[in-house]
Structures are given as C-alpha cells and as structure tokens.
Length: 575
Ligand code: ADP
Ligand code: TZD
Ligand code: MG
Image (cartoon, rainbow, N blue to C red; front, side, top):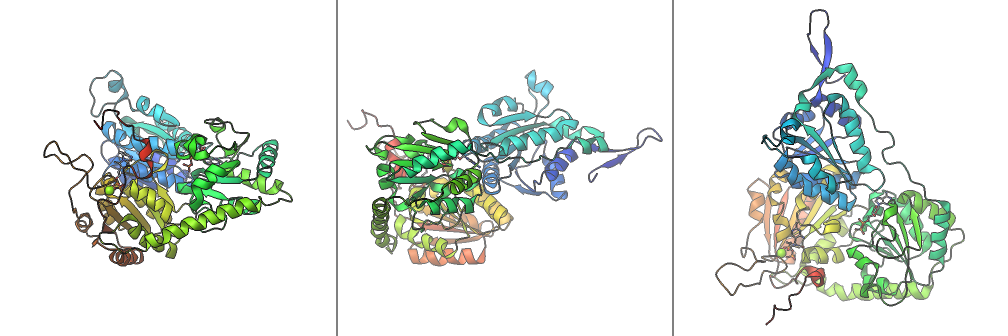
C-alpha cells in the first residue's frame, strides 16, 4: 500500500502499518477525488500537507465560506462531490453556510471537518474548539456521518460520496475527530477496508407510462413552453436535451444557471420574452427546475389568467406538486428522461406557428429595445453601458466562465449577457446569496481550465474579497469586474439623523483595483465603457489575475434590483 509505514513491534513480528491520515487520503484517491478546498489548522493541517504530498491538489483559502462555495460549485461543474476541509467549531461553522447552500442548490459537496474529543465534547468540559458538529450539521445537509475508528474511514467516505451525488444531489457532512487521524492499524487490513464507490449516481429510468403521459400533455398544447433549470445543466445531458428541445420545436426559457445549455441566441430561446411566455403559455414542461420563488411558485400575476398545465421532469419525486398540481410528473434523471421523450415522440408536429411567431416577435422587439442602451458611452457608466461591453467579451469567448453576483449587477447581467455553452454561468443560485463570487471563480478556473470573468456588485464582492490574494497566489486566469456604485443597490442614500452613513452606502470613490495590486495582480480603474473594454479584453487574453474597478453612476441602480417587490413595507414609514 502506497502510504504504509513499517514499524517494529516485538522482534520477529514486524508489520506494515497505516493510520487515519493515510486512510483518508487513500480513500479520497481511490474515489478519484483530486482537489480539496480548505483552510488549515488543528487538527487537519497535516492532512492537507499529506494530501498535497500524495498528489491531491489542496487549495488553501482565506475563509472557509469561500472554500465551501468553491467546493459546491466544483460539484455542480463536475458531478463529483466537491470537498471542503475545515478545522473544528468556528472553521466548521464558517463552512456550514456553503454546505447548506450546496444542499439548497442540489450541488454535491462534502464538508469534512476535524472535530474535538468526543468524550470531552459530550460532557461539555470545554475542549479546544468544542462543538457537537454532527448535530449542528444534520438539519442543513442531505446526510451527516462521523467516523470514530480508522477501519471505518473507507465506509464513511463511501457513504458520504454516494449520499452527495445520488438522487437529488446535495451537501454531506463528514465529521473526523482529531483522534481518528493518529489511529494506527495494519496496512493490509486498512487497504481492504477502503471502498471504491461503484455507480455512485445510478441512472434513474422514468416509467414509460409517465413519459407517454407527459408527451400527450405537451402535444395537446396550443402554447407550450419548456423551462430548463440548473438541474438540467448539472445533468451533463447536453446533446440529449438539445435534441429533444429542437425536435419538439417548443420555445424554451432557461433559468439563470441553465443559460447556454442551448445558446441564448437559439431561435427557440424565449429568454428575452420571459414575461410573455410565462403569462401566455398553456402547458409548461419543467426540466430540472423547481417552481419556487424564482418562478413565482407557478401561480399569481406572473403566470397570467389562462389555466396552465405543468409537466415536471425531476429526479426527486417529492418535488412534484410542491406548489401547484403537476399533471404529468416524470421522475428520473434528466438524461434518461429526455432521451425517452425523443424516442417516444414519433411523428411530432411542431407547436402552432401562431404561438412560436408571437414569442419570436416579442423577443425581437425586446432585444431591439435593449440594443441602444447597451451601446451608450456614458461616464460614469450606467449598468447597461458596462454590460454592453461584457456581453461582447463573452460572445467573443464562449468558453469563458461567467461568475455573477450582486443585485442590479446580477439581475441586469443575467438579462444582457448571452451564454452560448452549458455550465458557463455560475451565480447566486436559489437563495440569491451574496459571497459566492471569489470561491466560485477560483473553483471554476481550477476545475475547467477556462478563463473566468467575475461580474460583481461592490457589496457582493466584499463578502469574499480577501480571496483576491488566493487568486494571485495560485496565479489563476480570473478577471474580476466590480460594478462600483458606492453601495448596495445605489450609492445615493443619506442618513438625515446623524453623521453615520446611510445603511446601504460605502466609502465613495473606493478603489477596489488597489486590492489586487497589493498581491501582485493587475488593477485597473475604468471610468468609461471604452476603458472597461480595453481592460477586460487584455485580462481575458493574458490570463493574469486582474481586478477592474468599473465606476458606475451611484444613482443608476434600483432597490433590490429586479426583486424590490419582495421587500416588506411598513405602513408607518411615510408619515
Ligand atoms: P433553477 O434554480 O435553475 O430553477 P433548481 O435548483 O430550482 O433550478 O432545480 C433543480 C432541480 O433539478 C432540482 O429539483 C433537482 O432535484 C433536479 N435535478 C438535479 N439533478 C438532476 C438530474 N441529474 N436529473 C433530474 N433532476 C435533477
Ligand atoms: N447577505 C447575504 C449573505 N446575501 C444577501 N443576498 C444579502 C445579504 C442581501 N443583499 C442582497 O440580496 S443583494 C446585496 C445584499 C447585501 C448587495 C447588492 O449590492 P451590490 O449590487 O453592490 O452587490 P448593486 O449593483 O449595487 O445592486
Ligand atoms: Mg453596488
């Protein structure tokens, strides 16, 4: 065994030994895990070093939350569980937000945390970084396990991997107490205790009757719509999905992270006619998308007056009927489901031209309305002027990965920047969480080898900004563009009561580009679309770590971007 050590016992009874450290490493390697996102410290510092020595890439972050977001998005990109490794209590808690995020977003991830002595923790005797981590993690993930004995490391990791990737993917917690790492056992027995997970995410074939039911409903539609969600992007069934959508002739609407599964410029794409298709469609087929708040729960004004029928394709049976009746549930993995659809379609007739033409003309109308805004050359820039530049950057580099967070910066970029290939747009996901930026950018660069453009609100960036040092340290091809409007939503709020700044504003005229320079990266201050264009193109071509401070008019944004309607209103506010 690779990692075994020879140790003398009594004379004549020499045996090869291994220990907890080496068994964890061997178990990871056996299961093809080659990257770990971590912050070191007691009791996992040596584990990180030894992983690195054994050929596992160990990426050290400045804060566990960012390492966790990196692991989660690595899971989304690769269909293998992304691994985040942390120390106990506070490190564990810092990673926990990302674990919960992964679970919410259906990303396979394993948070491995070192923990303190069980005997002391359970008696609450105040151990170093004492915390009952397993109990705390449980409600926030798909599964949580603790390994107490070296001979159970193989099984523990196997269970964690299978739980993370099978069925609906999600976050898994694996608790490794400090004592475990030093436990010694016979190397042969240790080797035999390891488990290589076979068929970790088995195909789930849909029932033929459910396939027929779904196609019958879709066929009966006068105004059908397909909604592709990030589950469809995750499934890596890109060809199958494209074949089905194209054969159906049905307009499709990509959810944010499903953009590019088919190009946003595809003739059937209804992205630029979103309100119209949601309102006017009569049959909606959801593929790897949930009817949560992002789709107004499938009811209300967004969805118009006309009755709707919903077909839903999902690996999770409990998702069906979560918000409205699903007349045709199809439970299975997306690759198997859409292949079954294509096969069973037979002589398919395209949806009524009246509908597809109406969608196309609405889309063209909206695109035409937007075009002049994107070409404006104002300085300071507004969102559209800056986004017009970035739209072209991605158009010219369809393989680049776009990471995006903020409020206005997120909502407007999502609408403006067309995506051309699957899994190229990585954003805030189901929670609309701020702070995913640098972690996701780092993992995207490492896992794919493609350049990354991170388009960040100035507030959003602040949640993970210290990781620019990590970007420089690993010399990653990441260009961060900060839409600096001096604050959250707008930089114009004033506090009329005392000298404290208003709650949503930051230091005016801040120069985030200097942060990148502090670590040897390239910093640029861009005050016009032309300057922005020059700087981004240079960064994307050179691959040098770059941060561009894009100066945005502080008055250009609106409260909460596109979701201001979700803010509760006080009846007493405007006396
Ligand atoms: P979006 O935010 O893009 O609308 P969601 O995260 O709400 O997407 O939905 C993703 C859905 O995809 C989840 O319900 C999840 O169960 C499902 N899913 C994930 N992977 C697969 C897969 N391989 N096959 C089928 N469904 C999947
Ligand atoms: N904290 C976390 C973890 N997630 C959040 N979504 C928020 C707070 C609240 N929030 C938003 O929903 S958007 C946002 C915050 C703080 C920042 C918006 O400001 P920005 O973008 O500078 O990133 P714009 O372009 O100024 O709108
Ligand atoms: Mg801002």
